[in-house]
Length: 327
Image (cartoon, rainbow, N blue to C red):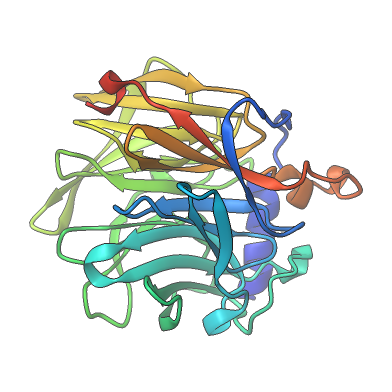
């Protein structure tokens, strides 16, 4: 049942119609190994290392931008993992967190024994498996991850209007915040997606199909008021959200754009940083550069493109950031 629900959600999420734009080779880029990698998420550590989750082939790739090298860090199928979506490097606990979902019914070659959706914990130094925590409910879809200063892990469930919380040391999830506004539109699609803490200590999340940005007030480790923020730009398939500067974030839109998003009270202002990506799926920052993963996901999920081939190799791209963008 859980596998069928994940499959249906994936079709609704990524089977939507948006253009597959050509790759942009003018940027500095690093290839991701795997002819069916379909990179879905990217995270960074303070030493400048990047980690990229592969939705198609499974496993997690470690990238060292200084040398331009990329190697398989977490092997496909490790700890029962399947397709890897969100990844988050938590250096305080020496943990690389990853969302795993069984998309084998869609033809994902990722090996593994899991039949549902789970949050995986891998050792950030060795890549060895540490823990596996199944998401609750009859069906779930682990999408993206963030961690607070106390070591609690927060996960967006794209199949349910719920932000899940795994407290430090806990073995099961709690429902941190629930709201019908987090649900996917009745016409189909996906709900919650990107998640990140702002410099104000509050939690911010995106909804993929509806294209909305929400603030969840955090008080004493508990969720408070949930506010739908209004912006100067209608977001199109907002995906990953990463903290940038004071009250600002980096955000990728599945329509092909990397944005800077500045929060101003109950509103937000979007400034395009770079466009022209082929379904960007995530972003991570290293110093004055934003690294964007280009997933080309329609070639995996859209039935009309199954007979076509993505542009190989898959790549992540370095986009220079202006000093004012990081403040």
